[in-house]
Image (cartoon, rainbow, N blue to C red; front, side, top):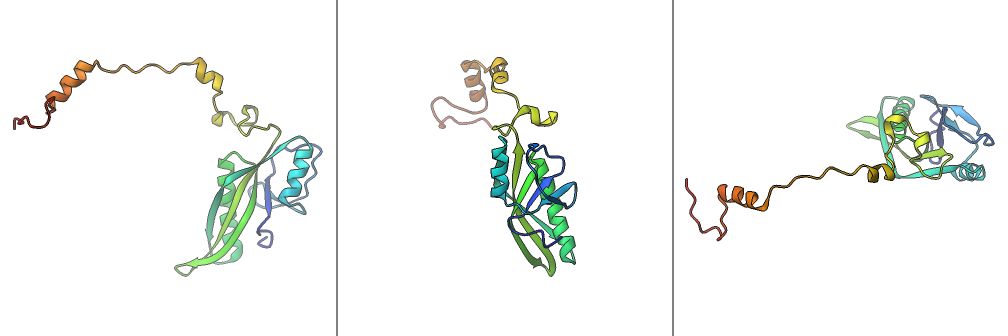
Length: 179
């Protein structure tokens, strides 16, 4: 499996909604995610857009490290953390952009860098119909229909009086304070 973890590799959530006309050859990976076989991100993007769907590319990089004594366990740990981060961003695909192997205090690690990707029918990423109920975003209309309650500010004289009682002075700081 470590030969699949390379720059340009794509992973896809097994439960992701895809266009019916899209045929993607995949190979099982871990945590209900699969490797996309024989397709690059650009080929996959063209196929998805030809079906009238959108293939989003999220700008922020996601970096995860996996420590372990063999390459397989390190890669699996880093990949599992990447998948969790991508799921947290409500995305259903990821593209690996960098794989680094090294050690820290003589403990070997594998660092995988990826970008979250997302396949969906709508052109806007925050389409309410495709998001889980717990992560739904309020529409602009809702914000304008429900005005924010006004804050009551104290009258100017009350604020000035409170300031003077705490040692403030209108004439400056030359006024002696009572100790």
